[in-house]
Amino acid sequence: MSAKRKQKALKPIVVGRVSIPRYQLGDGRVMIAYPTRENPRKLKTFVDPKEAADFAELKARELNNSGQEAQIFEAADRADYSQAKNDVAPYCVRVHVATAEWAEAKKAIAGRHKFTDVVAAGLKLLDRVPHPVPNVVKEFYASKEKQDLHGGYRNGMKSTWDKFAEAFPGDIRGIKAPQIEKWLDGEVVDGTRHGGRRKPNGDMVGSRRRDNILKHVRSLFSYARLHSYLPDEISEAKKVPLIDQGVGEISFFTIGEMRLILEHVKEEWLPYVVLMVFNGFRSEELVKQRLAKQSKDPLRWDDFDWEENEICVRKATSKIGRPRIVPLQEATREWLAPYRRASGLIAPEKKRADNEFGKGERLERAINRALQAAPMIANTGPKQLEMPGVGREVEDELVTSFEWRHNALRHSYGSYRASILKNEHALAEEMGTSVGMIREHYRNPRPMSQARAWFALRPKSSGIIVPFPAGATA
Image (cartoon, rainbow, N blue to C red):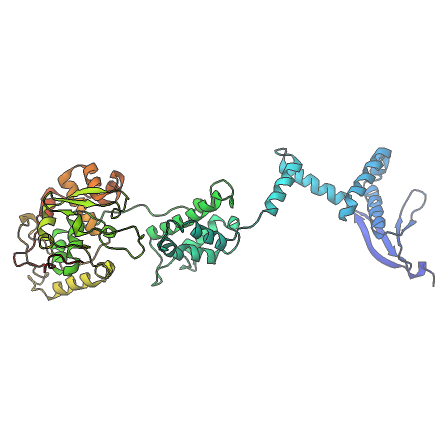
């Protein structure tokens, strides 16, 4: 049978309303049929199927436009077409496809950049080495080793960065602000919030804790940008807004609540409480913190100058990293009189303060048990004993239940002391902080009568302290 009789119809080339049929011949060649003025079905064969398809497409375009291309396709145009065809041949792309892609790219550039510069920038971006978040976290940890002698910084940050790396194992450059926000706040589905940062009991973390986590993430992105892992622009983490509106009303304890605290605190923790409420010390300046640096050393009895009524806060003790002299308040002096010959740390060295102080902890439970067992006055609340030296204006205060308030010991000192000093700079120096922090976090001035009553709180005559032996260590 002849090759012509073995021909097989192929998919025609269609441009607009024009269709050019193609046929596969038995010997492998491709034949096309197209109309001309002389022959309504002129046949032409090609050894290369691609060349046959390109020729068929050219004829179809000419016919679709009523031969306009044929009329203007002069020798120079044919030369240009031939050159363009040869240029794109190595990439197996048709001329019209290549020109269409080029035109689309030029339109996107809109004259702002050179085409070659855009290509070079794109190749640089595509060829860049990726930096997965877990690797960046490891590098960040390593960069802090010299300052983090005991691993406290790493341990404190693991709850943030390790979880962040687990949630985003890919390139840090690929993380977007909405993804970070969803990781922080979760999402609401059918009226229920799912995901987000949560406490061990499953509740969502508060706005302040949420913002602290975000600040940790921002520091990681700042590190990545500093090392050119991210472009030098506002990071995606920085685009996520903080939601905490700052502290609300500054918490403090009332005179009646403070009486109860002083009456029921464990004797070993009494100096700790006294130095916070009558001298404004920080917890971390009084007790060795679990994650504190090796260089940090809490306040010691040797730091007291009883003759000059001063407490010397050493650089190794001070949270702000510089020494300061704190005046020894008269109330502090009387409460701590039994410890004048003691030495060593003022607080238990191997015990945690948060087991004594805090919501639901021992001190709060002890006070509430005492309140429940106290005699009642007209069934309105327990009758409380009074401490000597408290002004008449607070004698009628009745506490029916007690709730521990975070940081309220130091806040109380700042609030009551502010009313007496009337000098924010002096108060800031006593508390080892800035005037701005005093205004924002510690100062909620109380009436002068209450301020005087606060610092008039004294040990009961019967004594509620069992002093350490002379020379004992905490």
